[in-house]
Structure formats: C-alpha cells, structure tokens
Length: 131
Ligand SMILES: [Zn+2]
Ligand SMILES: [Zn+2]
Image (cartoon, rainbow, N blue to C red; front, side, top):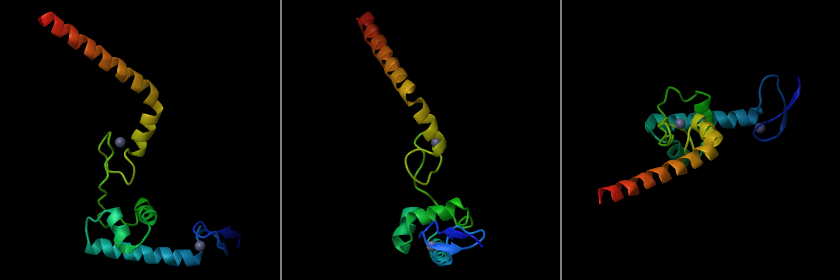
C-alpha cells in the first residue's frame, strides 16, 4: 500500500483510496453526526449558526454541503449573490458572477462612467431648454 499524506493533519498513513487518515476520518464522521443532529433539531439553521453551536469549523460544514452529504437536511444559507440572487455559501457573488465581473470589471466601469456623464449632460440640457 502506498504511503499518503493526510490532507487534514499532514500525517503519513497507508491507504489505497483515501485522502485523510483514519483518525481524521473518525473526527470528520463525528463532526458530520453533530452537524446533522443539530440541523435535525434546528431546521433552517444557517452555516454560521451551526458552526457556533456545534463548534464544528464552518469550512468543514461547507465541505459536507458541497459533497452533498447534508442534502436530506435543509440547509438555508442566508447569503445571496448580489448580481443574480442565487444562494451562495460565502462572499458577495456566486462563482459564475464573480468570474464574469472580474473579467469585465475594467471595461464595464469606464462604460458606466461614460453613460452617467452622458445622462447628466442630457439632463442639464433639457433643463436649460425648458427655461
Ligand atoms: Zn489526519
Ligand atoms: Zn450570481
């Protein structure tokens, strides 16, 4: 069996298809059970609430969600993408919008400035015409 470095604690262990050592696997299993139990007793709890009350790291909870392991329990995440309104786990934008925005950030910004300057100019012209 090949020796593998545990992704969580960095310890060397021997396994064929695992990325974390048996000790960490056991810890993760316990964390999962704690989170699942908490969610069953507190449906609709947010990730932050779960982390606070179970002392399980938020990152670990998010990992469970990403892996689809907390699927049967309704996890409501309070955060929404500011651009498209899709629920997101963290930050202000969903990954899709984030890449969209960072790609067109510079050009979009200057275009917006131009547009608002144009509007302002039109507005003052209209006001003058009305007088
Ligand atoms: Zn480990
Ligand atoms: Zn989005």
